[in-house]
Length: 281
Image 1 (cartoon, rainbow, N blue to C red):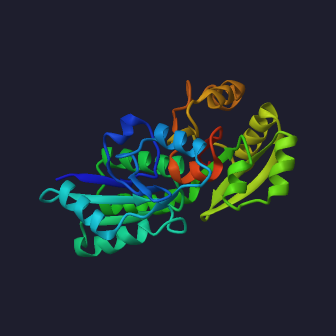
Image 2 (cartoon, rainbow, N blue to C red):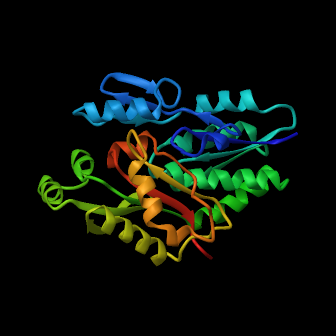
């Protein structure tokens, strides 16, 4: 008997962590073409298409039947599972998982992460730590409901162009920001993107990102921490890590990082960097 962790493909984390999970793919659409996220299109292919396309891609949720299929695949006799999905305010995927779990009462427990990408990634890493401690699926789900309230994700965008294309900001604001090299720092709370501040240039942007991390109470280094980037390389992220040594030194040798996938990448575009962490209690 064992506890399985099932997640959807919008969660991003290191490849080592992924190997311990069962991942249910959402579908990414470029016009009339649909691709199973992480199966028929990977992050690099996604960003190549995003940069070339004049139309923003969309995603569609996983259906209840896809989750039922996942349960049947991973649950052996006596096994239980915790399902962790992206925020229900962002997608109907949580509802699909909850519907599917109705026929597995006492065996499958569904948690709405209330976040996405690396924010969900660190909650999933924490869930795996709880599995290793020998906690039951019910106990893990209950603990995650409390722990998710301390998850923060804060990002620095390289461009306002994709927020403009997605209708999040006006063309006038995007044009002015481009002329001034304005880089906004944003957060995701309750499924809503909020602008915390704006900086001119990368160095000021990195400093502002760190200021916002401190404002929410700082990083709890006892729990998982994950950095992310959008686009085809992590050059901007590595520069941020080097510029921000004071935030990590004495706590971690170098923070883990990964590529941020399609759901967030669609709206912020390439060249963004983000930090996901548990706030100090």
